[in-house]
Length: 404
Ligand SMILES: *[C@@H]1O[C@H](CO)[C@@H](O)[C@H](O)[C@H]1NC(C)=O
Image (cartoon, rainbow, N blue to C red; front, side, top):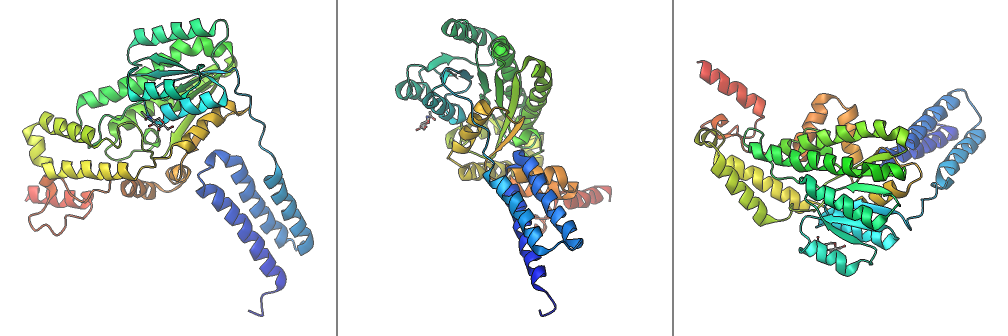
């Protein structure tokens, strides 16, 4: 202990503060604040180098203090005013759409809220609780005529004034399960709503958005960037959506239209907490399956997937305010980010996916979402003691048996 001098301890303390600051930013999932993260890490390296050149400790501390104060006290750029800006949000029957429509109305936006069911709880709730500025429009985004009608209605109400923003929120996750076991119509259904529906709405409203040099904010999912097991139908549709959104961002830059994607973590929205809905989907899936597939995978395997998903959905966050806050930020920040992570852990998830070796990110995804214990029936051994071994291992055993 005596060997360590006071400056060394100061150095260690300062370094800890900086590395801690960087880690905190990382864990707070604010990777959208990447420049400041890089600045923190850069400052840490700088401190280390400067120290190596034996700068007096006092000078060093002053330098660090200046950096710290700069990052602490720099005010965020002032948000644009909401008043008078018109925004159209799709999928306001429940979930993020419902919550966002209410918040935007309260902030003074002129809200056009599209709903699937104009006589449903969501629509009635919006009309009851919001100001008269809010308009509810009935739109199934997969029906081009309904989208066109919504455009006409919106134009009629707005007059010559354009639309400030489109919030593409409507989306579905019709089922989950191994790709081989999912129905083709589930893949098509997800694509139809999440991709083609959003594309159709975006194309229809673009003339109004170009007029104001406005914004497009699309709610997507980390499942569109990372291969979550059992979410292929949903994930593939969101992957297509992400690529579309990112391409639009380039194409609309000359028009001054800013395009952002919001990537929420797991929240309790839509049908996720509707037990009866998932039971019914599960039953439908079992009925549609060929006897050979049912035999090879086993009904218990499929029930396990369903139960794991349901328990995952039960743990989902019911407080949607993080996502709503993010949408508001994307709407009003003078320079919105192309990508927003909303909710705990999303930034970390992307960090692992982007920077960790494949073997680690792969494991992470398998452990994170649907933690299956049961093997498909055909891969189980009679003895049953290696049920929990990895799929790969079991696969090998099985192949060997077949070869013998
Ligand atoms: C809409 O959001 C409010 C809270 O803002 C909630 O009380 C209500 O149940 C939601 N409605 C639907 C249909 O999700």
